[in-house]
Image (cartoon, rainbow, N blue to C red; front, side, top):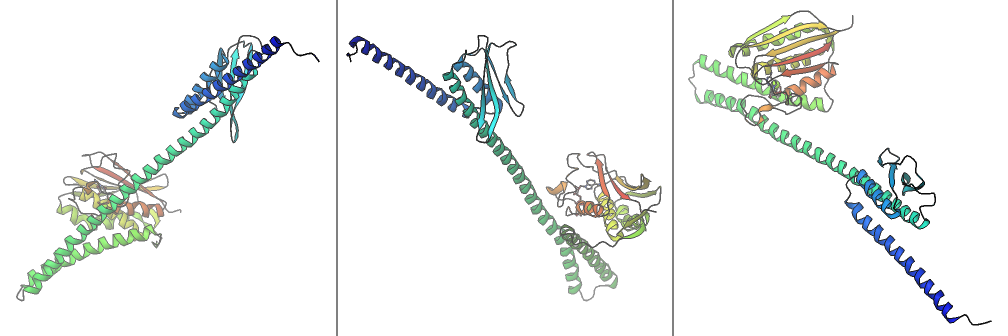
Amino acid sequence: MSEPDGDARVEELQAQVDELSRETLDRYRQINLLYRIGESINDCLGQEDICKLVLRESRRIVRARKGRIVLDDGLTVGSAPANPGSVLTVPIETAQGRVGEIWLYDKRDADFFPAADEKLVRALGRQAGIALVNNQLIVGLRDHNEELERLNDELKALDQMKTDFVSNVSHELRTPLASIKGFAATILDDDEMPDEILREFVGIIDEESDKLIVIINDILDVSKLLSGKMQYEIGRRPLEKVVQGVVTLLRIQAENKGLELTFDLQEEALVDCDATRISQVFTNLVGNAIKFTDDGWVRIRQWVEDGEVHVEVSDSGIGIHPEELPQIFDKFYRIENVVHTKEGTGLGLALVRTILEHHQGRVTAHSEVGQGAIFTVHLPTAPV
Ligand SMILES: Nc1ncnc2c1ncn2[C@@H]1O[C@H](COP(=O)(O)OP(=O)(O)OP(=O)(O)O)[C@@H](O)[C@H]1O
Ligand SMILES: [Mg+2]
């Protein structure tokens, strides 16, 4: 065996070194590229930004004229040429599988894209997959967070309402209690009180006790309704009788404020209802109308339409801002919680809504500030 020619050997080794350095350089380029993309991909905000970045970098690697990314969920970034000479297609993969493809085009002949470049684009495709999955997780987390914040705000509002409620109830209970205590003490202190004054004072004590009973019953009713323990005694009754009863009861209150109170019965109607509960509905609606009206009138109107009886309670009072309308039916909600000028605990309309729901009915409200309010009760008429 002859010794290989010294120069040839050197050349051979030289070629090997060149080859190795080229490979090392390629590797270095590859690592550098993936590292750089890995960095910026994390700063990308959405799916589309990630795709744009990946497309830009893949086109740069293979020096493709055009390219596009198509995701299985429908998103497309970039475009395809009309007559591409060569095409390179690489999947975008996640741990769960393929989620889309990277398409790269060039006008020149097939085999324009070398295997080494294809490898690099494949690596990019995997990186894109990871970034897209991360992005989904981040979006999910953000939504979750927003939902949590919303719930938290709701809880805070509810907590505030409860605080307001406790202060309203204490106020509502304290006023009649103070007056009962005051008049009872005066009677006890004065042995020679004339009968007439005595009767007047006892009358006041009686009235104030009634107020206490109403408030306490309301609170008990609400807790019964909330726990679903309310018993309903349903019977067939003319609705106008129930409404008329409420009107008679509240007429004095209206007259004391100089308000005109009318009941326009356009059509009689039989309904299957618990008369006590339905009476409670109208006591609150007409009571509110009187309470929130200082001048003018409170009008009630009953008519039948499409198998439903409608009872409208309208007033010429202070009205309600349309934005507040959806909330006034929430328990404890009172528009004037900040300045407590009118009596009330904010339970009335919550009771109205719950009671009507139990009767397959509903209540609607329309109002503008300063234009009075209209509350309409809808109840199904009894089947014949
Ligand atoms: N006819 C009305 N005109 C103007 N505002 C009204 C009217 N009816 C209700 N509201 C507003 O809706 C709020 C809620 O009414 P709701 O009957 O539930 O409570 P309330 O009357 O304040 O207390 P309660 O009925 O427990 O005595 C009232 O505090 C008031 O701000
Ligand atoms: Mg009320």
